[in-house]
Amino acid sequence: MQKFDTLTGVAAPMNITNIDTDMIIPKQFLKTIKRTGLGKSLFYEMRYTQEGKELPDFVLNQPAYRKAEILVAGDNFGCGSSREHAPWALLDFGIRCVIATSFADIFYNNCFKNGILPIVVSAEDQKKLLDDAQRGSNATMTIDLPNQEIRGPDGGTIKFNVDAFRKHCMLNGLDDIGLTMEKADSISTFEKKNTASHPWL
Image (tube, rainbow, N blue to C red):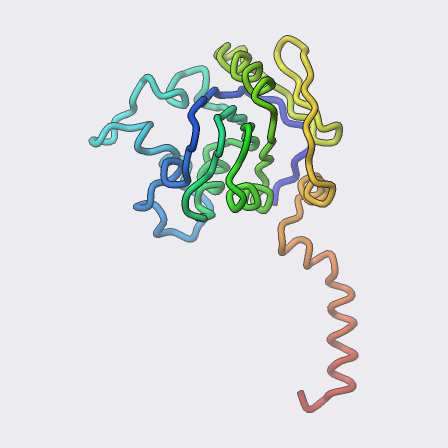
């Protein structure tokens, strides 16, 4: 998993409540188990016509936000089914951080396991960040995970909370497999001892 330390990038405003996982990546794109290639189908039904042509009014189709790495969204982001393809699609598009006033629990957990930082902010802070994000190509924010700060284009700072263990995993790029591999030496030692004491197994 890619490490997350400090990210500076364009923030796209998507002030929509209850963005569910089917809106993030519709069900017809769930046939793959690969984590790549889903970015082109991110927000498919909001982003394209039925003929597959881009809708110019959708925020991520606008020139200023085509390479956005941060998303500022509304309440209850990631609700609906538990599909892990949702964070895969966001990450494949280039989104490394989603900021909202609340998240669905399963989606929130899946973000951390896939290298996306979900940040919960107050309604007041979200309003300020949405205003910052509406500046187009000037909507550059810095997400400072070590110091747990969001710095806006005007120099304003918003603090955020994150669980210490999850912060450790993000800073060190540790998903579940990475956490297991940290114990590789201990596992190997156990297996050797177990084989020696139980050779019939």
